[in-house]
Image (cartoon, rainbow over all chains, first blue to last red; front, top):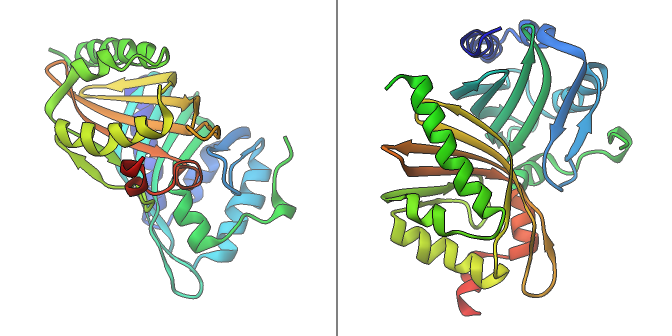
Length: 141
Length: 142
């Protein structure tokens, strides 16, 4: 895939996800995806499969956040197999607290699928609003 | 100039700037800053805000950082460039004056205009900034 095709793919996937249809985004993630939550806070870790990512990270987020959560993409910067997305969260916790984080996501694509994700966000806000990541779900290594 | 050619030139400038930052040399960075340069630290931390103008960045951000860290070392891992933007995935290898390691992870989104850096938007572990550096006002005291 070309740089332009990769950029278009991520624009399409994230536009659909922001409109409430997350299925195409999830379907584009390969089974052996690597997702790195960067930094040194309690959520920082590397998820080494789609199963672990969906269950331990997205599943935990779904347990904390009210339905209708969305991430609004603001800018796409694409170069070869990487697409960088700056984005703003538009979310609330189940008890009604706003959770609007700032994200920078680096996606690596291969053959039209997402093989790697690196997430940078405001860890101070994550810890303050969502609390510490549960030790029982924390990835080893 | 095509978007691709511009991206290539900007990438070379930013690669040089960060190759030198990896050696704790800020001079190429300073030489490439536009006068109306702004540095934005994203998020809700006590350092998070937009520092607008080269003088403000130097006085209110770089100076307090230097007061805490001495030499500042930032190591680039990957550059991703398109048009006016160059994204730098990087990490810091720094030590505070009181001996604490300060190794933040950065995603820096730089915008260039005519070979000059006009904007640097930094995403990093904001909680680690608080833990290692404390609030910015305390820096100007030391």
